[in-house]
Length: 397
Image (cartoon, rainbow, N blue to C red; front, side, top):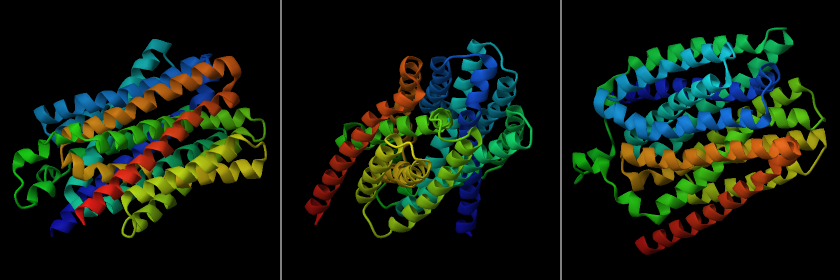
């Protein structure tokens, strides 16, 4: 009976994450149209992407406060109600300061959904969380696949970018309803608190703040999320500006990359039963680096296509596997998940802004090369995480 109730929570989290994926990726898909119609620069467009990431970061501080005052269900319901409002205002193309404010709130909604989904699944499933988290993030990939794909179809049929926004507006409103009808008693359950010897206060244990391993994982996510946000926000524009493909092909390619990400997360969920989490993270980071190098060093359409799809496959499992790797350190703490999300979100804030600023000077195609920094540090920190985890395993034997 309990399994059915947990599935009730899990499926709603999956739907919320799928729509969140659509809501995030649609911004990147329509960004070229917004730049052209609103007459803004690459730097300004990068500011919008960074504004969304700042909103995502603010969720790390504001959502736990909202939860403490309203409870998880009411807090997530009220916050997700802002998403359809933001999309409607954005469709009007208001003055830039209002657009920026809209993206801040939009990011807050996304960040709150991320914190709730990851903490709920981590808490409920405990030792099985790696597999479930990969499945959860798989649902994000489904939404991320659909957004650019639907945008490309709508454009091909003669609809404008606003039509896509209105569709996602409806889906985000449905998300609020589903979150608002969850069973809050199960939402608050934690497998950590059911382990013998754990008290209720252990779910707010802050010992993770003294853990170097925790910060290592957090900064893997910092550099990873900077890379992911640039793929989400800039790659349709980047691929379009390479001159080797049409806008429709570029949009569809980014869309299919997320389909590959979905399959990659399913594979990671299966591998998590056989391989150590730190081993999976290291393999994924090395594969990502190889594909990224190929992507920005070639002008061949087949190679660019293969490289971007490969990049999506190897990036796919990094976030959920890192969250699961950090699970035993944060011990079911909402504050722990918020700190982890906050550090990772900073990468998503800084990187798109830097890329936009560089693009105004040397062009979007050349500026993407700056992401080598992110790729390098993801590999370096993954190696350190791998070594630390294997040292701990040897000491415990």
